[in-house]
Length: 177
Image 1: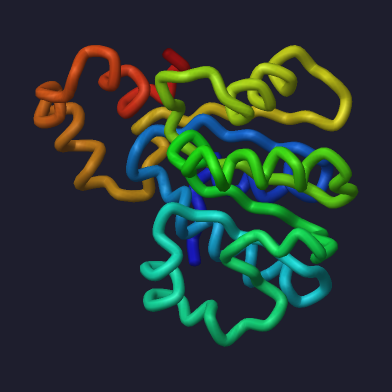
Image 2: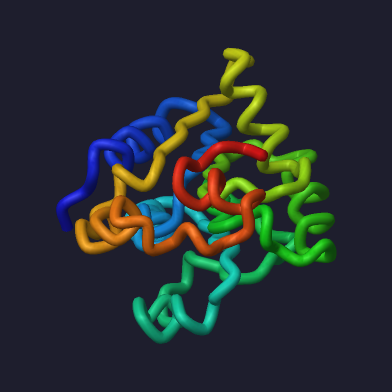
């Protein structure tokens, strides 16, 4: 697998910081990176991979066969790494469970997502990284960091400008709204 500069920065940050938060535009390889990191990390630690599409991940990557990766929260498990793919779009129930889990968590956390319109745990952790709080690291990647060159050319051709004004900056530039 060949990774973009941003994806490589994320992988490096996960080994150096407790909380890594990435505001990323659409189609920048978030889910693929989340799965790759989960699989690599599961060799030596228990991993929680929270995603909007667990069935897609199970089907596409066969994660259902890997014993060290959970796709749902087990409140009794000790996770060495928690990866949250699109945290702003998790249900409120899962978000509350995640917040409880993070309260006493001693491992590392990676949140990858397209910034949402509401303030959330995702934007809170991102802000902490921007402010240089110890243990926090924040990364922002706009559409130009997408490994999908066809997507980049469609964005630059203006094909996606039909989305609502409040969503456009977040989807293209990964700006918090």
